[in-house]
Image (cartoon, rainbow, N blue to C red; front, side, top):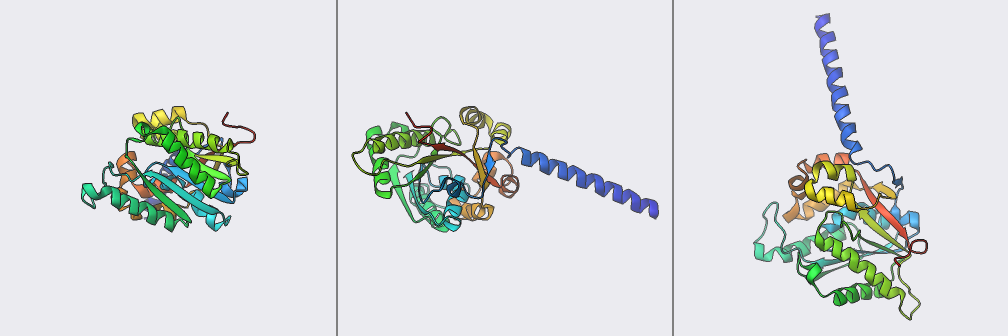
Length: 281
């Protein structure tokens, strides 16, 4: 009987060590050694007014922690722009008529930003998948007008060369955002644009392992993050439930179940650009 007990203890110990090893290996895929850990990126840079410029409904999921903590930790004013209604997306699972998807996803995004505590959010109607073919001057002027109206000291955007996922709409909105900031800086007015741009960065190792060709592209074309902060995982899960038409997106894209992804990926990563030290040009 004693031998059996000892054998069970040994087997259990081996299993615990094995599971622990797998868990820590998984966490290492979502670790960025270049990133300084902070409670809030917005608090770290002293932001008081924050505007996020995105391409699609559910893009705000990449910055859920940043915007939630900007409100709860830093009492910052927050605002979002989403350039398209996401009408060309694939439903995972199917929850609506495809012809109604743009309306459904717009509502999902507005509801999710409200759940994150965002003060204002406008969703535009540029074609999903067609942002790079849209009129550049018009897009730049619209983003610039938002900046003039909201007067953010921090803008949150996509890195133009990678777009966090490699999506061309993301990349174009990152480029347009930079052009708009440059335009505002040249205005004959007191407000000269934000002091910082905060770019959302995807975890490199995980992208390389699970992201396929698009993941490899992003990993090769994004900068090493300068900051990491808690991702507010609970809000992430709430966000995917709100985005019912995209609820299974993470699992469909990265193979792993959403709960496991966020058990490992519990930080958001950002590249912070101080425009006084590192101007756009």
